[in-house]
Image (cartoon, rainbow, N blue to C red; front, side, top):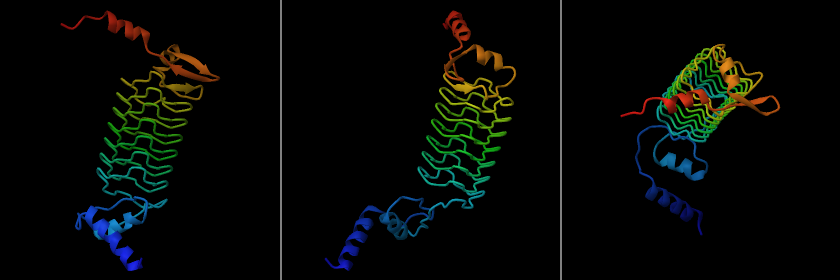
Length: 235
């Protein structure tokens, strides 16, 4: 079959499945040759996010960045409000002061990422890897961190009010100046290297059982549960 015939078939297929004109929003990486052709036909810039790329202050609100490789990207001050970063590779990325409110970071890789002052209120960080991440003064209010890995993460001054840390790995994490008011920590694991706020340290220890050598797991607060059970029955 002639090469030009094959080319016409490919272009015909894309013309049938893709709109000919679209808004000038960037087309984010989708693997394969067809993705580049789709981008060209839509008159949109096709781009990959290379390691260390400068995205400082970029407007990426509600962008579809699922599974995108952005390790080492410079994204300080970027607006990622409501963005889908499911499974994204953000290892070592600079997200200092970034807006990540309500973003989906499920299973995202954030090892060694700089999240100082980042605003993550309501974000989904379930099963995310935040090993060695710096979250100084970060807003983690109502963040979902169930089963997330926060080994050796630094959360000095972070606001974790109402956050969900069930089943999270907090081994070696520094939380001693973090705000844990209303934070759910049942099932979270910690080590001797974990720093808790002074006013919570004894309570955490009393609720924990050793599940491995040097590793403790926080169990439900039985005293609080009993109080709830014995409280007044709603009318």
